[in-house]
Length: 157
Image (cartoon, rainbow, N blue to C red):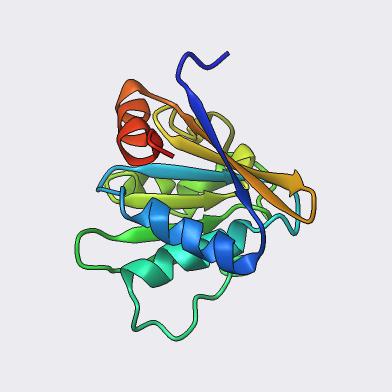
């Protein structure tokens, strides 16, 4: 059981999911890991697009890394590694695709459960699940630092 408060937000549609991703981007710094959980079609890639586009507005397209597995972006403040681990068969494959090196930067990870024990405990977990006609985004801190940042960023909502 997580000892830190969790935050939940209803996202009515794709636009709200993109905007929520942009809002998450405002709190990122080097060394952060954001793990995106949810079934197929829950909006993980849409949220990722909103986050990435808010950091690099001149990007015309943010492709899903489903087939490339990882895509690296270079916004001003840090490197951002966008992983999609859906196609991995074994957790140790994250070593081959550079997860260990990426941990000094910002890692945005779709299908993080595929990383097994290679996924750091100190992370922000975002779970997307159905909520009526929209989605529910549930945020859970994996460390006191994340809990404090979430409180500062979302505590007044």
